[in-house]
Length: 315
Image (cartoon, rainbow, N blue to C red):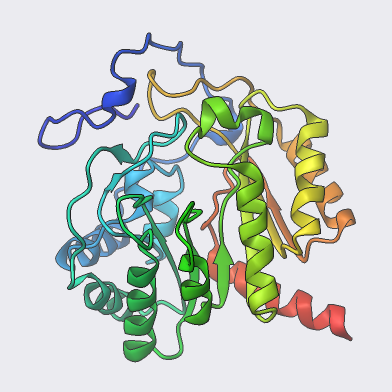
């Protein structure tokens, strides 16, 4: 279980420290994973460390880190490891962020080249302290990767850029191949799960990406097991379809610690399969729904599937 402290013993989640401990539920067999530690895993970790890179794989305590690092896959988290928001589900540290690292775009590009990535996912912490929410930094990272690795396709997973006028347009103009922004959960859970965000603002953000550049694939993901109802999930699917989102991911929520929002239910593989079938029937080009599905898991393979699905739809 992830602790609430960082390596230097400072409080990782100060806003959660006063909360009573939630009981930790035993995970069902279908979401157990092997502990990482192979030679390839360590090589990937070394490349990341040598380039002073932060990954969401580590910071968000992703259960798939062993599998991805062994395949030399990683999702890079830019703009530091401290977030300005305090979502109840998230393991990323909360607090006052450090200034942006001007060398980060080049460092990320170097790591992409070293790992020989065909497809890379770039995400970030929320940076509400910045005038543009960090949009300009996203653009610099995209340009640095394109300059050093012109054949690598780029997927961005951005914050909502709430109250940051022109930020979304800036990132879209840099023409990432995939624009991802996660809804995280159904509207009724926003107040307790991600109080700093606004559900319909995020829907509109995804819709605007397609309005500005219809060639960019759009993507969003949610967690289940937070106490949402089936009908709420189906309504969320309809909302994303109305925004012309191409790709939906659905995965099981796992609490990073006893202080985080508790798991209300472990959704069975059969239930995930049912969600996947319904989502396809509603018109998504691609759906990934399973207990261990995460937004950036198998992103490269999924991008190839997205392109094939769009081409098949046109024929």
